[in-house]
Amino acid sequence: MSIDDRTFRTYMEENLDVLSADPAHEAVVHQGRRVTAGEFRSLVYRMARALRAQGVGPEATVTLLSGNLPEALAARYAANLVGARVNHLYNKLSAESQAAIVRDVETRALVIDPRYAERAAEVTGLAPVPDVLVLGPAKLGTDLLELAAGQSDAPFDSLAGPDDICTIRHTGGTTGHPKGICTTFEQARWFSGVLADDDGAERRQLVCTTLAHAAGLLADNTLSAGGTVVLLDDFDPAEVLAAIERERITDMFLLPPLLYQLMDHPDAQHTDTSSLRTVTYGGCQASPTRIADAVRRFGPVLMQGYGQNEAGGISVLRQEEHDLSRPDRLRSAGKVLDDVEVAIRDESGRDLPVGGHGEVCVRSKMIMKGYWKQPELTAEVLRDGWLHTGDIGFLDAEGYLTIVDRIKDMIVVVGGHVYTTELEDLLNSHPQVLQSAVFGVRDADRMERVHAVVVRTPEGTVDEQQLREMVSAERGAMYEPARITFVEALPLTDAGKPDKKELRRQAERETAAG
Image (tube, rainbow, N blue to C red; front, side, top):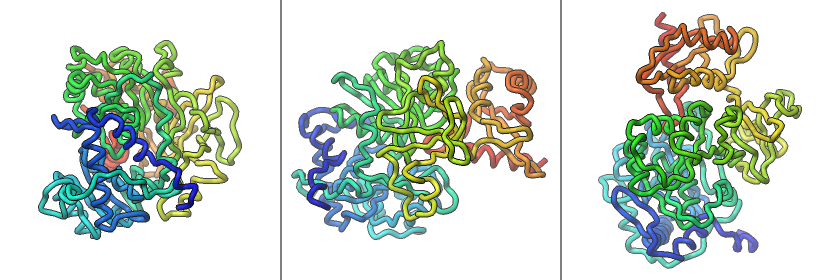
């Protein structure tokens, strides 16, 4: 680390300073446990020293396999404090996929939730690691909390420099070589400026999705503002609504499918959600019709964040911009953030004019350092300082960015391209449709056919032919699905996104079966 780097303050140090300022403040809540700022801060420093005693430090990777525990959040802070890289596994991946990631990032220590001890045994059987450290007593590994209890909680400076790797996050793919996205300690602060200024009002954030995803970044932001983080183990709409009322929640993050489940739940009609100020949604495409429903249900509290792990934050559609009279505005991802440049480019790399549909390319200081030990793949997406996102979109005359599709999800049909999100928006606009997912399936001749999976309202009776006729009338025969299947709920990935890979596999099996 250079002399100049010694003045650098990491996100953990800044947050620990805030925790030190009011040690009696309630910082983290989980299953009736209420952890004060002082207790959380003490645990981080003790845990950091315990990790150092185990030989974990700069250039090492700590991998987390844990649910939403206060100790898991503290373990990430502690590992980063000693300069280690952190990789947080999605819990619902297969043991084989988790082991591939553990091996790929060269895990020095696997830190596990005691509830995942059996899975950890499977993973380490496939990918042995030097140390297995447990957040409590378990049959497997060493109790990290017991080790930490014997250490000092005196503050010390982070061993990390601004250009060191802070996190390695893996993309949603679960086959082939894992694609790890490397973010530096300097870039780890990107989310701080995205949330609206609350004018010093108390922030109480509910985490009901995995800390391994966007909710973990929001938790950091909440702690930096002197707020309280309330952890739920998983998303359950009834439990989320009860927690909002009980804990007077002001902020939370949901992927769109989970937001729809929340507002459709019967308890939403009689739950006091008046404490909510910011419900951030993102991570996958949202339906303008359903977002309008959410605004009517919860009030003017919706905020959309568009970004990528590779790019950091890109754009935001703030609460006041959720105009119910402007469905085009609700369809957009908002305005590009300050200090972020966006260009819309065609396949030859030429910048397109306002309204032109092309790949969204981004340039900012928050762009990833690269993919973990995959220079060729890094070079494919990082060219001349611009990150090629793989998203298709356009900018309008007012500077709002709209995402149309993923390049890989766009369906090539006879006569042109079908943008899956545009068809989903149209299907979702039917009063008897709650949600839909559109994807391409190749037939025996290897031509892509448009498939749609639809979730009807509880009393909905709309059938396949009626929806086809609506699509044909509104968008033409090219957009008309070859097949529409009705289900009670869409399968979701661990992050909460519609699992189109699984839907496509199911459709391919059904097609093959005849």
